[in-house]
Image (cartoon, rainbow, N blue to C red; front, side, top):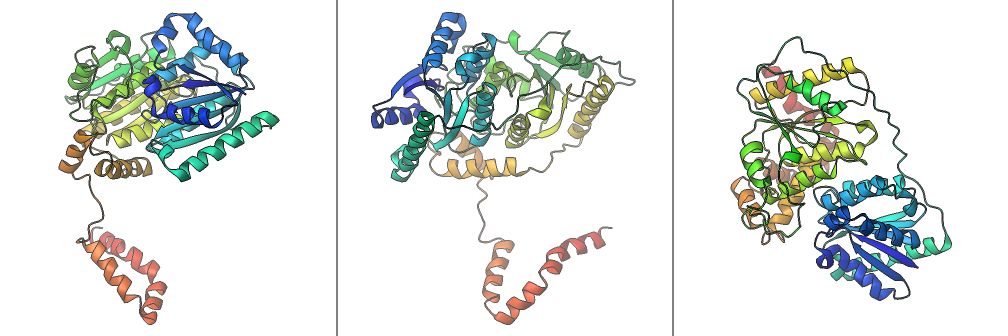
Length: 460
């Protein structure tokens, strides 16, 4: 078989993910692998369409396509996202149609599921024959048991592709027809109370739905808020995955473009940050992905902690649940408060105007009382994963994280001296007595709710 490998690491041949493919190449010499470093060479691919078309020709003449990519900020790198956008820009979908395909990702299993769900949806949108994804931890290749899994995955892929076995579609096509939004002048203006409000957008088309929604949001306040168009910032490129920021949060782009200064002088001091963009192939634009990826110079430190965050989006968010989960998880992991998401998907201008006004009010009200919603599993689970990784095997490359986590009490492992832990130890010993165990089992429900009932009675 001839397989086109679309490599997604900005590091090219030094990609960790790609080493799995090199291993497969040696184990399956009967198959031909053509590797394209689409993320590393994305600028050249964008500038010269013939380079893009060469890749598409390889895809078209291949029997299968493998998407091989590391996970960056819950998705694929911005460079890879841009390559995917080019498929639609140059109407190259036909080359991908009916090709057997699989996705290989590497990470520490932090939101790898959202990255793989995104790629699965892209394959479905391209009418490809998706076999499966393989989510690998970075050094699984060195583990014999994990290599066995890799062999099974690869054998199964080749077997299904060679036999022409049918594959199932997971995500239906998005059905969306934009309806023009008509902004209304607000009946009253909101006093910001001195709160700094920053809105960041990847579009400056004032005639678009997004442009009108931004205008409506701006008009909700007394005085001006600060609105920044990404295109006005000099941003040289996406995150390179070099981890040079790990020791002291110093980025390889520092002093070369505007991003770090903008982040430190605009986002850091803001009380309220609103991101406004349009949905593009089941995410936001590659420019937005680049913006979020570049925030990684802060590594895993929650730099938007206690800020009020919101999203104003144009597009069918209701049909892209994976994107909503990513947005919520990003803000929870950054320990901010997701005050709301407003979209134009209803097409009802009156409702959209009301939602924008309510969002503006909620942002200021929540900021005034420093309100941050309790985390869900998205934030708690992700934070614990990084806590454990940084404490152990990631402490060396991410020294800045370790120092922050240590100073801010993130290493909140079970405390053997806590009252809860000591109580649990005593109860484990006590229930060895059969009669006491029976009493506890029969009164479990009442005892569980009792402390809360007593609190309510005392504080009614």
